[in-house]
Image (cartoon, rainbow, N blue to C red; front, side, top):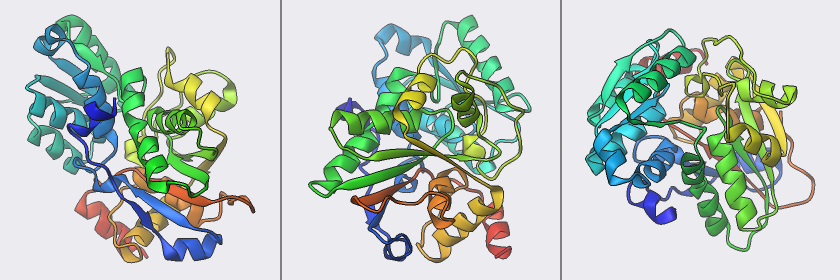
Length: 315
């Protein structure tokens, strides 16, 4: 699996964060997926899924749905592999992400006022055309691909103890993959899923004990928007069983984390990529007294210039 992912994705650094370490009272490290080749971790799952396709499936092309980052990743990997791709996106998609999807060579189909509407259209289109539908989160190949982040963290930590990993949570593929990889390596650490208040369908589902639907709301963390599917087959069970703690952050807290990333860390981080950082900054999650380092997964950096200027101007 890791070899398949490494054909398209890079190993991202685990960066020290001295100011955060001082605040928390222990070492804090940032897993900088915002420096990934497509600007987010999603290229890992896309690589794992597309590299698993048979020749017949490749020739039929693929269909995906995305709020932006998954689509950009699918387009990038499909373009490199010579696979025709259509990516359905909701009409509110960030222009930066839409440009990235088209730049990779995929056909971008703007459809639906919500992610769920766009996803339903994408699944129907895949069924009509006989193409493989590449889910952004509910696919064991995709989940395993995202899990390569956990393998890298384990390697980069070496013999140093790891107290916790804070991971952005939406459809659950990222946190499920990381948790599974750490368990495979027998790394004893707490896995913390961090949701945005306005994009917390998975969190609501875990609390309900089954997948639920919630109205879609506008959010800075638009990469986390959308549902998990009432017929969810993989990611819900994995999140329920593998994630030890849950935290949720507000829009104001996300904006503050994005400002902190730019002004103090010198990193451009999108809203969805900043939620785990926000939880730590605001003291919404407290590190246990005993244990090792805390790793914060900074999952993406694809944010429009206008959005970033507005956030920085509000400081």
